[in-house]
Image 1: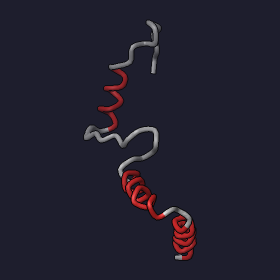
Image 2: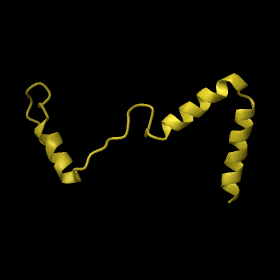
Image 3: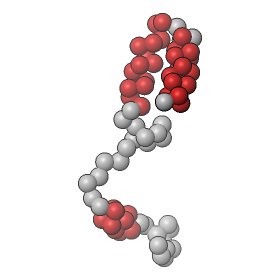
Image 4: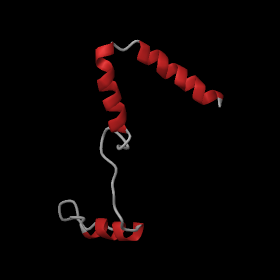
Length: 71
């Protein structure tokens, strides 16, 4: 598992350069990112299957200014 050790060492070296008083915030940020897929939006939680979601999206389309859009 050499790759994991490589990244662990990189992370440890980065953490060594962070001021001690900032470390609690670093841990908080790291833990909060576990629940998110990206910085742009959260994870979508939906129990519907793909067909139901697609049907919902299609039924809620407005037609972009009245144009007839076929998907």
